[in-house]
Image (cartoon, protein in one colour):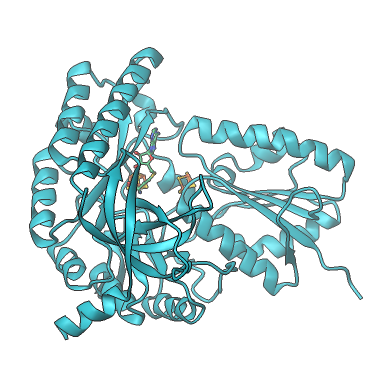
Length: 450
Ligand code: SAH
Ligand code: SF4
Ligand code: F3S
């Protein structure tokens, strides 16, 4: 009998990488590998990496340093680097880090079993070709039991924002087959999943033979009304009215839109090649709020893009005040070789970036606090996810708008239930609530609209 090989995978970066790791494990399970939860006893160790900012890559270099010790103890261990950093650094990863056996970019995951076989016989493997068509439609990702699943519906990106490595590490934009996505949601529904998030760098440009992202959302939501459907990321340029109405009409499409603004300055947005103005952006937010009452927004913001002045930075704070985001992911600009912005220099000092980022973070914290106070005494429907991190006597779940809610444990309530609660306290990050009842919220809403 041949021995089963164990594979261990560690995932960095965005949710797209989380979904890709499940895909890679799906491919390897099909070839007879088993999955293990620790690096120590694995025959194959894979790091699925991120290149978005320099510190993301530094973390991986550090981790490879640790893994070197495992390799020294057990030289037969195969070590592989996958993902965006594999695509960006290619062969130099193997040249610089002798312990790395394989380097595989996002479009060559089907070849991983072949590379691992080669590595077992001492050969290095490298697969970094990008594809215009690969979407891995036919592969069932390996997923643990759970409530939430990430489903990648597009790959690549054609936007070429000047600061960003993604178009280089993930290649051209392409949409996955519509029916394969719906079939995957059906499988998740049968397994008792309660939430799916459709993923793409710019989901609004999804198109499969004329079926657009609004069509995909509507069909996804119709699979099982007990499944909440989320999506990310929307680019402000292509968020259509049809999409907004689709969200409004489907009770289990979450009223939450991640709409990265990046900067409040039109001059900087132009240099970033973001293709919208702040006026367009704010109009879009107003329109979405009219069409979808109570919709919440989150954003991404970059501090210290090349040539950004303190006045430019103040316009970013101003947009944050106007929109009042529910949440934000906030970053210092990191110059990435090969991008257009790299050639603009990196002229905002580290101190200025830190100061601006801190101002952005402080402002967002006070806005989140303020927004959350408006929810006091309101009723919310929460999908129960498990015990609260801080205490076993409390349960935690999330609202439709993606806010964490903590409430006292109750014998009737199980993980995966929808419950109605009343908010009694709110901080900038968390809502606290009293339990009211168990709900099957969306069925009622559908009876109403049918
Ligand atoms: N496709 C998505 C997200 C891509 S990466 C979108 O367009 O919004 C997630 C976020 O990382 C970006 O929105 C941006 O805010 C940030 N980011 C990307 N490149 C960066 C860089 N070079 N330096 C700092 N932040 C960056
Ligand atoms: Fe990067 Fe812009 Fe594409 Fe997002 S839309 S992945 S920021 S190039
Ligand atoms: Fe990072 Fe690649 Fe995602 S660079 S953010 S893992 S697309």
